[in-house]
Picture 1 (spheres, rainbow, N blue to C red):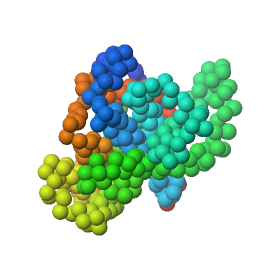
Picture 2 (picture 1 turned 60 degrees about the horizontal axis):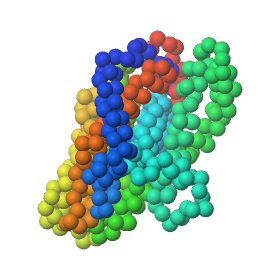
Picture 3 (picture 1 turned 120 degrees about the horizontal axis):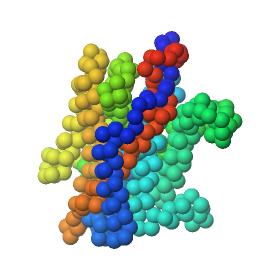
Picture 4 (picture 1 turned 90 degrees about the vertical axis):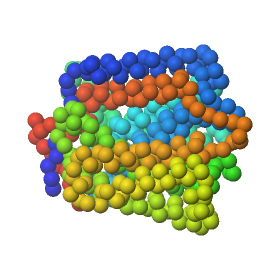
Length: 400
């Protein structure tokens, strides 16, 4: 058994100088969102018949949801591998996941032609195309967003239970035990749904056939997308925890994060081994060095995936917060580059087409990131998400 402090609100002022700066970025993003809906996709983006998706899908959705897999990755450790010592990381990871997936959903409404009709996807079951990979992704992502906020709801109810009498306190007192009893079922769904849709994001690119470069086009795309998202999930937990400790003067979670660093190695080695063996089986190993710019992107990807696995082998270095933070950023970059390469760089619709994001695309993406940061700050300062500072009595969490 080891003592850890119960989750508590960070407290302090919400509207700081940094918060105002980020809110300005959001305001600019909102202006461009309005412009996008007024002018249409053709005038506001670099999209075309050849490139029907750009950074709003490749980064905001495909990469964004992978970065939001911290809750999924930590849940695998805590609830499947029974590593109870990582339990304090669950709530912060779920919050990151809930915000990331919710804003990915918002990005989709901006990206599609008529986003206000998305409600029809879950409701018009008689029109479903059961052979569609995108249908499975849409249904899973919508369901997972709901599951994540339900998993996080005890934190909100714990706050309202301590507040003044009224509807929120009464509802929280009533619903809290019910949600707690149902949480195992939602946790199970929270493990199933990302497994389905993260792999299906790879399946989507299988549909492009010969348009995807052979270094990325493989029947194992669903497996590679799934494995890489787990590595990105662990990386974002380390990234978020380290920043929270440094910027908010929170206790460092060095031992837990060092443990995550040890878990990452096998995941990254497994990913690179599968990818290289797949290229060998398909007779594409030579393409690694003969594909021009595609070879360069591939080699950078592989280097970024292998570097953290090698540099985190030393247990002493894993306990160095700065080293661990740098390796987390490398893992995030590796997974993000793999997804952007798969969806944009290695996608070849024809020489007559080209794509580069426009200013509105960039600014809307920055605006969504700013909104996520602002919501994260508001929630952790108001509700019990992060581990306590030590001012409260600790509670025990079982270790295995």
